[in-house]
Image (cartoon, rainbow, N blue to C red):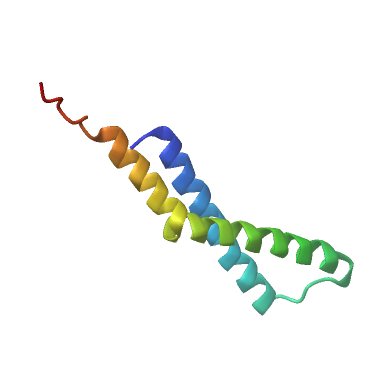
Amino acid sequence: MKAKEIYMYILGALIVSGIFILTAFFLFKEMPQSNKDIMLMLVGAMLAKFSDVIGYFFGSSKGSADKNTMLYNSKPPEEKP
């Protein structure tokens, strides 16, 4: 596995775990009124990135990346005289 792929998986895991941590925080803690707007903006940004991560790993982008890898690793056809 390439270093770029490792970083991609780590970043995806951080975003997904961040969503679960923020959700747990909102369920079990009282949010201070002075920080409410900032926290809601943070949640919105995290949800947008969560959507991107899910779209990549389970959507058409993953299939496209797999296709590119398969084409890169394939042998070119032999020419007939």
